[in-house]
Image 1: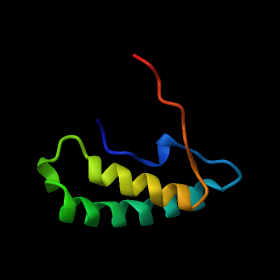
Image 2: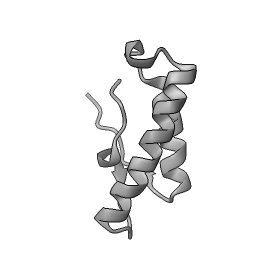
Image 3: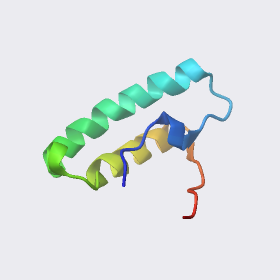
Image 4: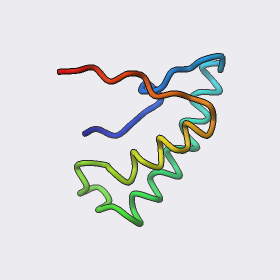
Length: 70
């Protein structure tokens, strides 16, 4: 699993600048959460980071893009 980024979310009606600003806020919060509840840089699954990042992005009104099936 990789770390989520703004590219994983539908922009909807938001401008690119707003999406990137919101993503930066969410990344900062998620990184702090990862450091507290994950294994920091050693957590290869990035679970705590991705859960908080997703919740933050959704709270800003973005939807996760459909995941491609392998």
